[in-house]
Length: 356
Image (tube, rainbow, N blue to C red):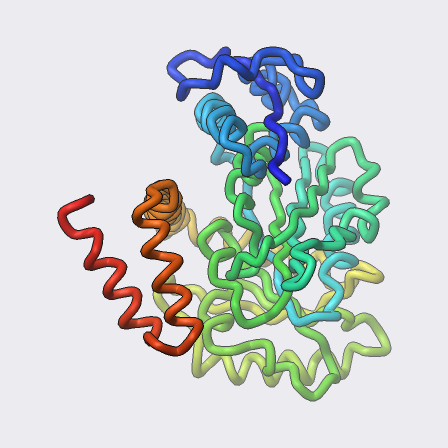
């Protein structure tokens, strides 16, 4: 069933055009300009509505989403973006609720947003989206915002529109934004293109502390925390930390002259949070002083530009009936085993020559 458009009216100077048919509907009565102003003013219902808009697949909503992002971009970029991942069962949600609450208590200027991504079912294509229920206390705080999203089958540990949601949270004034990934531990590739700092959570005493730390994760992790290390689990946590530090000597990415600290923490009790605060602060100061904090963000901007172009080109091609027919025919041949995927894709690309 096609999704309904969110009925937002035009109202942003120099913004992309908005479908005039979207004027004042039952679901929405404000303009894009009014929605943008409410988001900038820190209105949380407006922020939630804005994220719903950018996540929508309706054609009219996409036009309005571009207009909204255009209006909000000058107000983005001032937050500290932190990606959080870890093996299943490591306690990411409990950790984030506890650490986020501690951060809000210790810093009256802090505003914390959590973008939590749930894996989608390959059968039903749905998600439970239960992270908000697991962070109920944090969610009640007036300076906190929690938004669960479905991964939609998207690889890389994040949802398709997580970047847009992050930008909207920045425009709303949130200065700490945590992106909680699906937690598969081995395919968190896209989150590194979203955040300033990548936190990996591991568990002590399981005998497989290094299992989640594949080489790719090791190269991306900026800080590693052995969660659930509160007494009496501290000795086990120290043994796990020692094993991980030894492994990091072989695999650490030396590009930015940063050696990831391995800390002991507990989302249950707050154990080790002071050390984590210090590590976040040291990482931020170090990266900014070296100049690669800004460089990383510029590289991310280029990455998402290329990513958007690829998605846009493919979407445009799928609207061409001749191309779509050839595409579906070749896909069927691949499924039957008559063509291998590489040969079929080469044929598909070849058919574009002279047309693009």
